[in-house]
Image 1: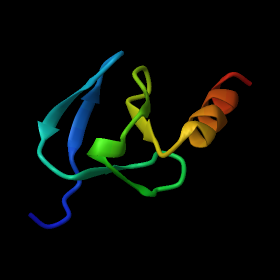
Image 2: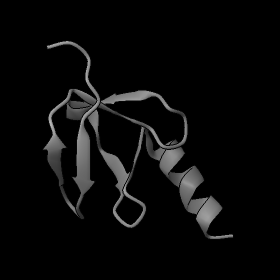
Image 3: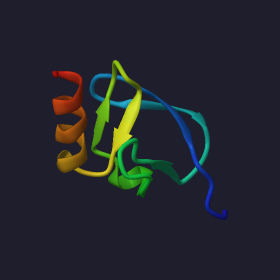
Length: 64
């Protein structure tokens, strides 16, 4: 299978795959995140983050 962006629904401790793929994009940087490496997301915003750095950046931006 070639590179294909997956479509997910983010839940509190897991995510559901709606459309098969091998990666999603970080909401902050646009970097590809392989599904097996996806550890950070926001359930309310339905966004994925590459690392805790990007997750913290988004958290700070919405808490202003």
